[in-house]
Length: 134
Image (cartoon, rainbow, N blue to C red; front, side, top):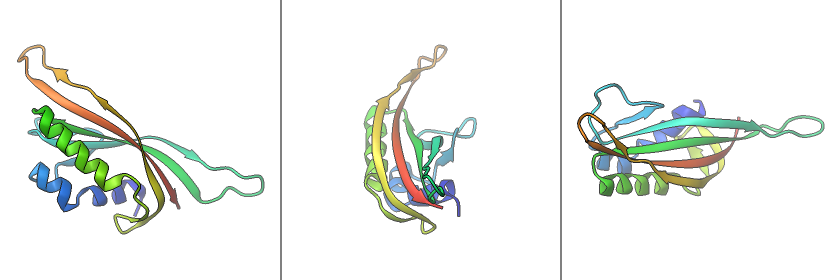
């Protein structure tokens, strides 16, 4: 199991999917026409750890999770649930990747307004640094 699969499995816990009403969690972008709410995730960067003689098996990767909703209250609730699932996590992520620790690093609010329909979509994006071994 790779890190992305393990992250999806961890996010698909009852806490988040109960609020979503389904397992509407997608890598990078949601399918076109997907009804709100949903969650997207993407790898932002992966920085290997180096040593003088041999590189250790520890890596750290930055993932960004975005919570999308037509309601700011629901977007905040989803963001809180996602943060609670991942923040300070250590152990077997999704039952398959050995994680030393997940650090909650950043959160930004990015509302979008459709210029034609004037419909607002609320997005809250969070960054997490995941330290893990391969």
